[in-house]
Length: 200
Figure (cartoon, rainbow, N blue to C red):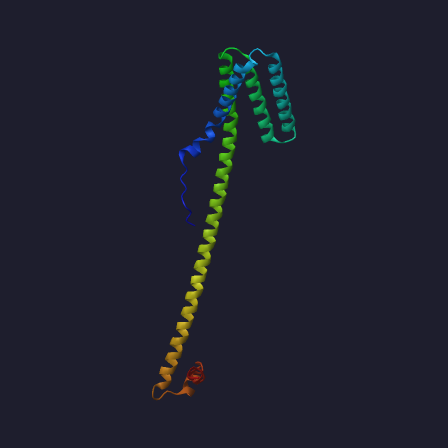
């Protein structure tokens, strides 16, 4: 019943929250490196990124229709990343890439927050279910413990009563002037047979 209390480090809790910002920042940095190495105003590179982004978006749409929401969201994220990389690699200034980076980061957090809420809801439902099962098993265990204790006490009481009755019969039979026949005539149990069986 007693489970160890696990305290998670704050970095372990905060690391997933920084994931979307790290991903969009990485795409922006790599695109600006690509820009400095010849992608600036390169129509071929921009066309390549546009085709890849469109293909990823089309793949996400088909996956969403096929009932694969996780893969569809991944495809849409790849499509957005490719579009951001294409624009950041093609443009000569930083204002448009930074604007697209901010927009992509906000959108990434919006989608991630939805999944985080779903995960938290599922975790709470699981903990509630486990808690209810624990309480149910604890109740059953308490009832069975009470039942077993009651049976033991009843057995002890019966044994003690039997021993006391046998001792009373022996003591009464040892008294002077005790008449077995008079007791039997009064409708009481046959003490002689009980006494004989006890002595055996």
